[in-house]
Length: 149
Image (tube, rainbow, N blue to C red; front, side, top):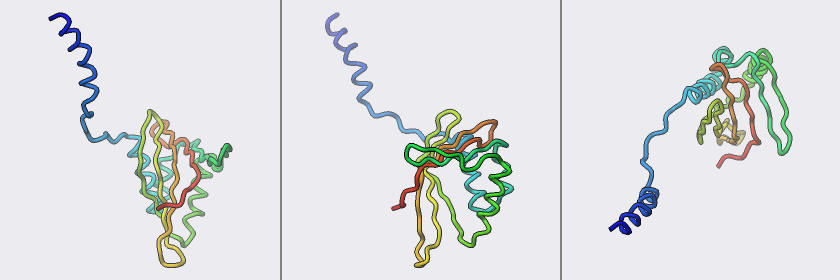
């Protein structure tokens, strides 16, 4: 009997581990909501709404292979660049997917699309990692773009 109990106890963790994990909806974090609001403001070309979500010391960091470069440093500079960018007649919009939230970091796949010269929408996607500090976007690491499928 004691031997049987020992075998059952040894097999119990295996049986529990073999069961599929319970499926529950992933919670939406405040950080994810912040990135969604920032992207919605971008899509609306609302620089003021974007600025309200930027940390005063925001940095945009572009990653290329083994190199990284701070391409925009500071809120005033970022706002100026967005104002210039939005003067373009080309309407670029972004959508987000593939979320991962880890503490103050949000990783997401951003897909940008725009009307192409041939009348078809063009698109590309990139992985972006947002660092959140004081409930504002502090840094964005933007990885190389990939042609969207």
